[in-house]
Length: 396
Image 1 (cartoon, rainbow, N blue to C red):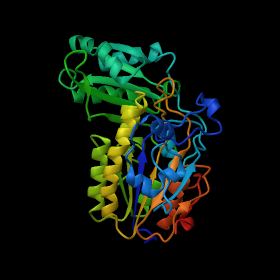
Image 2: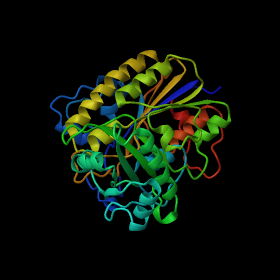
Image 3: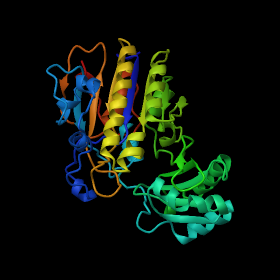
Image 4: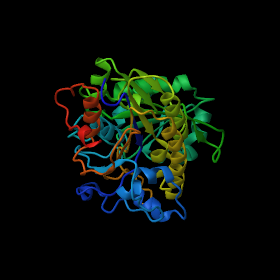
C-alpha cells in the first residue's frame, strides 16, 4: 500500500485559470474562466475552495487569499495539442496527444457519411451543423417528433451528437443509432472523438429539456494509461460522471453515472464513506455543458457555490490516509466570444488530513503529473510511452 490509501481526483469540467502562452494559436487570447466568473458575480461564496487555497492560486474579486491555506496548489499547462475533454483527461492519465481530434464545425458532416448513416439507421438526418444543444431542439425537435427524422449536429469539439425524444424516438433506438454512428466514424476520414446520445423530453418549442440519460461513445485511448496500470495492479478505479465514457471503460473497475454535478458530488461522498483502495476519478460536467458553452458566467459561479457546499461535506468524511486532488481538463470562459472551449491552464489543488505542510508549488508543464503522482503513490509503474512526472514528494 502507498502513502495514501485512497485518492479522490475531481475534475471541475472546464474550470480554466488563465490563458496559456500559446492561446493565440487557438484564438483564445485573454481567456480566464475562473477570473472572469469572479468579476461578474456580485457575491461569490466558496469558503471551502478558499480555505484550500483557490484564491491564493488565482486572484478573485470577492474572495481573499488565506494566510495559511489547507492545501498545496499550482497551475498546470497542457502539453497536448488541443482543448477538449478527451485530450485533457487522456493527458491527465499520461497520454500525449499531438494530433488534434477531427472537427466538422464549419462544414457539417460529409454527404457520404450522412447518406450512410441514413441508410443504416432508417432515419433521415436533419440539422447537420454546429449548434447549441438547446437551440437545435427549439429549431428541429418538433419536426423530429412529427416525422421520425433524426437530429444530428456537432460543435466546436470533435463530436457527432444525435438527439432523440425519449417518448417518441425512444432511448433504445437513440442508442442503436449512436452505435451505428460510432462504427461509421471509426473511419479515418470521419473519425471523431465522441459520438454522444442526447435524449430529451417535451412536446413543443420552449418546453424541450435534455435528460440525464446522455451516453458518450468515445474512442478508446490509443495506449494504456495510469488507470490501466492501477487496475492491472489490483487497485480499485472507481469512476463518477462521464469518466467511464471518456476512457471507453479502459482501466475502470466500477462506473457511476451522474444526473448532475451536484449528484456527482453526492456519489463521491457516498463512495468516500465506504471501503476501497485506489482511485475515485470524478468528472463534473455541468460546469461545461450548462454554463460554459452557454456563456452564462453567473450560472457557472452559482454552480461553483453548489460544488463548494458539497466539497465541505466531502472534506468532513475524508480519512487520514486520503488524498483529494481538484483540477480541470480545459477552459470554457463564459464571457468569451463564441461557444468553444478556451486554451487555458488548469488548477491543481491537493489536500489530505495528514498533510504537514501547504502552499504554492511550481507550475507543471503537463496535466500528466496527476496520473504519474497517483501511480507513484501506489507503487505502480506508468505504462511505456506515457508522459508526466510524480510530485508526490512535494506533497508533505
